[in-house]
Length: 292
Image (cartoon, rainbow, N blue to C red; front, side):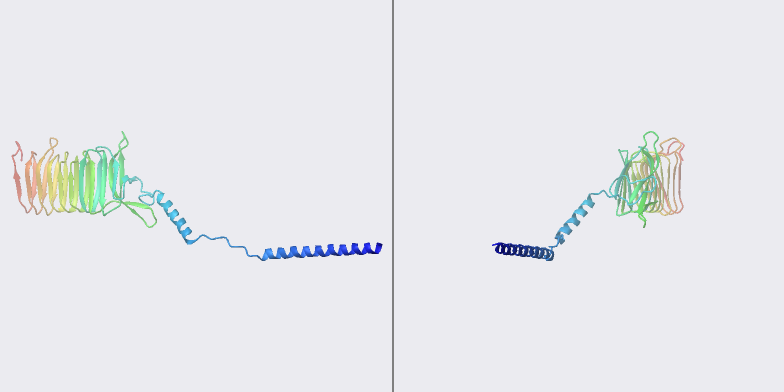
């Protein structure tokens, strides 16, 4: 009986040992299989998703404010309010405006606002240079229009003259205009005082209250319904004047041309200095007492 019990114990021990070995082998097989199973790749964004993200970035860029002129503006230059071709700036009622135009038709009109509005068609990008401000309210009393251009480095630089197919200004009725032109037809109406020098082109001035100085090398000069001291001239054109008179006692009238005609109608000056080298002089109207 004792021998039988020993054999049963031995057989049971062998069975337990074999089961343990089988379990270990099964565990090792499962680990190896797990290591050899391929891991699925992380899904990459498709081209459509990438394009959508690029479109969203571009959309965000368009929301960002873009400066009218890249780079810092020169000292004293203000771009004013408006687009690249039309700008405006608040000014003193008696502002003095300086400008140089190399080419283009120039139109300047007086209006009832204390504001200068400038428009240039198919031409220069421009800004307002403030030369002086009023001590009383800080509004500009002296401004000039300057050509603003970008350099290769991206900075903005201001030049003296602007150009365009059409150059138009609306200015306060009490403004004084100083204008240099090269190849420009110039038309000015309804301001306080005018000084114009032109190389080639006609000059037409109306409704100026306190004096006109206008000269052109090749072109005609016409002044109507204006007052104040006047000095008009053309090298190879006509000078036509109608309905002018002094604004103050002592204001003088001068007109000259080298090879054109001078026509004067209804002028109220006591002293008129008129000269044409090779053209005619026509005067229509009554002379004042002691006038000459």
